[in-house]
Image (cartoon, rainbow, N blue to C red; front, side, top):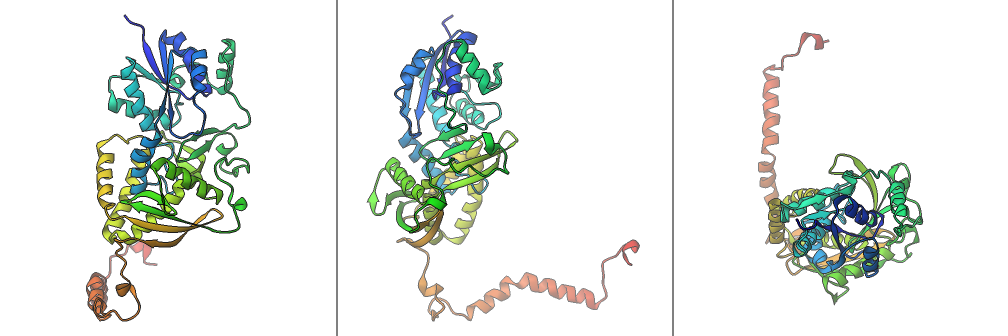
Length: 416
């Protein structure tokens, strides 16, 4: 039999550094690594040498930024999906993209197993594995945290030191963090206690609102069919636009979320998220939808957004329901075109004007002035009579019962 080949989702951090020698010792296998660039802002080229030194056969560095924004972020933005009213799904929709690429490279490299470094308590194990199953239901999955005897960070360090493996350890940032073009998350350490406020030096992308400029900043965002295409009149590609939105919002203290969320695996978890550009783009998109969507579509879409957010959070991106919801969302976005202007001030995003050639807002109807050609005040009387008819009938029926002394039976013990 040929030697087992395992593909490892590799970041170069402590977990995946230790996993390479662990795989070789416990599975007697060759290890091929894949590092996905989704905009984490790190220099990834040095990972080639690092992976080789710990026993990897080779390393792929995949630039997935464009696909990440266009095929995952924009559809979620158009849906208006927010998990538990706060979380803009930054880690959630990056995992399916990475997992899909893992399967593709595993096939290319004739690997029969894929390994990830997710813990048994988190959501990411589900997101990776469900996606892998969607693209290759026969692929073996190895999750060391569910197999090995290492129970802590200290155990991992001892394991590596015993084998002379150089470790990427920094005690300056003790938090578990995940960064991509959309957000930066912080979990663990003192944040595990909800009564603790985030420390002042926690934020890395966004300035605190207290330190933001004392002068408001005005920014305009142009959308075409629900997709942002320009900022302050300058058209940009997807990656450049999101990068620009992050810069503008971050310097104004926008996009900081402190959330105790319900994980898929059943526990509550506290995290602090920095999503500056995303918060800005969501606000503009919502303002534009307010004038371009009819009432029934707008209200129904809000219900759909909740389900969309759940699916994404739970790792069910590649499912028929998510795809069907996205098809519905796309149909609602055909006229969500125009410009939303926003005012940013010390962590806040205020509406500052919105315009669309497809606007359903008509001043001639909405005005308190004379609009008898389109709307007569007299029309409202008939509308109210019909709209309020069930309420009126209920009140009349109650009067009849009271006049006939018809009362509900009351148990004897309650009559006093």
